[in-house]
Length: 542
Image (cartoon, rainbow, N blue to C red):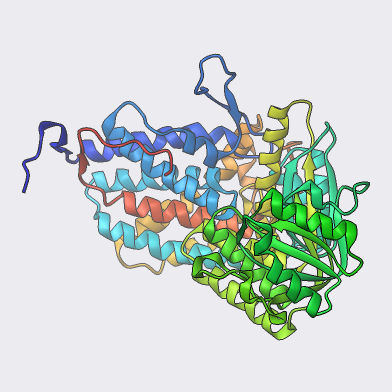
């Protein structure tokens, strides 16, 4: 075994210094994101990579946490990176709730750490937090209600995004396409935000070449009763297409869409010549949807299930030499422009398509990562049919990119709310979990566990307090009036019924924030030793 060099020698810190430093570091992350909580968030300025660029202005707690990749003190940095990971993972999973989680974490961790420093048992406190969390989650679940109409959807969108043109568009879009409908958010071509609805199943990608644009006036190719040859092949020569074209003619196909990863100029010229000179067939070619092998393989599977075709796959050394009628999928209509490919009324066997969608849903339930779940949900939405395109406008490209990010985040949270329901916003749903916790604490016999339950109960007013503070109000004058579905409309400072006022939170984000904060607090309380490597590698991803 090789000897450890001086630069690899670990540095070790013990209690009580370890716990205090860990807390200070975590609090720096929490304090950095706290101004973003509420309907009137304040912005956090992030220093740009290039000195002459303007600072990046953010109100997204998860994004802010991710931008902080290191703090100066090595001991505190470990606590900071712990909190950073908690907030970014939550943001990736449900799109919202990171600021709430941060505030809850800070309050619970501080209260319990003080108790442990005075002689409490950290492991029993952790058990008490985990038990109390389950009670709080059950109380939260009892408050969940569905979003039922466009007004509620739009009001909810407004509570998570202050941009009226975006929230109005998203309210309409999700009322029409539903929670699982496909939505593509893209940069617009003007300062106006526009939406477009697409009949059928939409994939980003589009035509492989303008030479195969059958309708130059509409800038698209549209084929009725289309046969679709699905592949991920790179077609380098015209001769590679000959067997497929022959099979299509023999099958009596008059309109053909070829899906391929690449099409050479020679091959495109052959297809263009057929369109000019043949009375038997019209043909176009579109890009294999997706970026990367995994995404393209998924697209081939989905297209095959939708159209009843059989994909020709390069990875298993397949080509067009043995294409038979069974390879062709079919649809009532297929069309493509340079940016998208749409299939309308795929002719695949309905039972097989339902089975395919059910398999994707099972994959969502079993998936371990938010990224994988979101990919699978996008596939389900695409196959269910009905799509919308939101083109986000702005005066400058920077403004459009910022607004697009707001729209994407709001859309993710809206999907979650439509799928899982909503609870009262403004921190009121968390406050209304307190009676269940108070009752539960009276049943606990262990003093350490009872203290943990009290700490969580006390912390549940922290989000409501901070929302009021961030909105310019003194929370002390309101707190005794909050609860039982009533809270403060932080935009006006008036007491209101939260649901009637449209002040709502996604149930998934509320559950996620509570779960992440308490489980992270419970874990952090058991950290007794910090071990540093001399020269650790920095990582942008949490």
